[in-house]
Image (tube, rainbow, N blue to C red; front, side, top):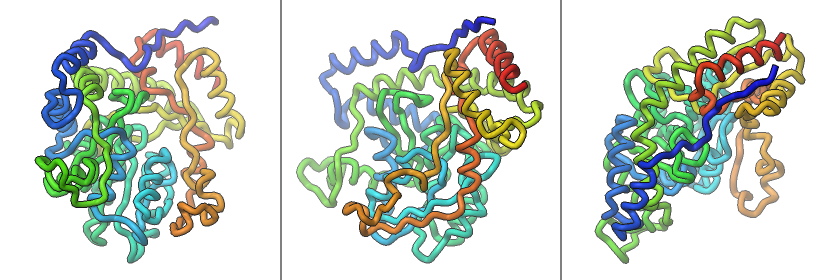
Length: 386
C-alpha cells in the first residue's frame, strides 16, 4: 500500500505574522521596553499560562541561566536535574558554576523521579529543575512538599509544556520560576525565543537585572549593579509569537483529541506502552507523542527498525534524548579547564536509559493532521508491530 500522508508543515504561519512584523518595522521600535509587541507578548503568554510575573528572553536556555542567577545559585551549590532532557537543562547549571546532580526519571511519565530526588538531596542542594517532558508534567504536589521541607528552589523546565496545567495551575507557575522555549520545533515558535515566568515580583526583578546587562533598574541606562548579560527578546520575535499564541488554544485542543485517539488504538497492543500523563493534569500539551516498544517482546532492534520505517515514509519522528550522563561533555570532564572546578554526581538512571533505548517520538505536527492521515499511520504501525 502507498501511504500519502497530509502532515502539516511546521511552523504554521499566516497573515497575522506578516502584519505584526510590518507593524514592528513601521514603528521603529525593533527592541526595547517601549515596543508594543514585547508588551503584548508578555501579557499574552502570562495569560496563556495563568502566570502573573515574567519576562520574554532570547531563548529557552538563557531563561534557566537567568533563573539560577536570580536565585543566587552558583559555586559549590548542587542542582538536581533529570537524566532524560535536552542538554540546556544541565548546561545552564554548568554555566552558573553549580554542580549538577543527575537522577533518574519515572518509568511511566519519563519525568523526574520523586524517589530519586529524595535519595539525592544533600546539605548542598539548592534547586531542582523538573522537566515536563513532551508536555507531561512531573508530580508537582510531591515536588512542592520536598522543596518546602528542605528549603529547595524549583525551576520548572517547560520547554515542551506550553498550555499544560496541573490541577488548574499553569506549567511554570508552580515553582519559583518556569522556563519556556520558542525554538523552531516547539509548540509555540519564533525561530528562537524564550520566556521566564516568575513566582514573585522580586524574582522577576532579579532575573530582569541579570538578563538586561546587569542594570540596576528598568529606568537605568548606565547603572550596572551586577555581572549581567544581554538575553533580551527582539520585537520581531515577539511579533511572530503574538500571532502564534492567538491560534494556540485551537491547536492544543486538536493535538489532545488526536493523541487520545491514537492512544486508544495502540495501548491495547501487547508490548506497547504510551508515555503516561498524570490524571491531575487538567490540560495537556503534546510536544511529542511517545511510544515505548518492549524489547523483551519485540527484540532490542525493533525500536530502531520502527523508527527507520516511519522516517522512510515521511512520518515526522524523532528518537528520545540520550541520558545526560552519556554525553561527551561529562566524559573525563575534570580534564577540561572550564569544568575542572565542577563536581558531577550521577545516580542510577536505569529508567532513563530504558526509555531512551526503547522509545520513538511522533512530532506534535502529526497530531495536527486529519483523521485519514492518522488512520493510515495507525494501520502502518500495526503492520510494523505484528
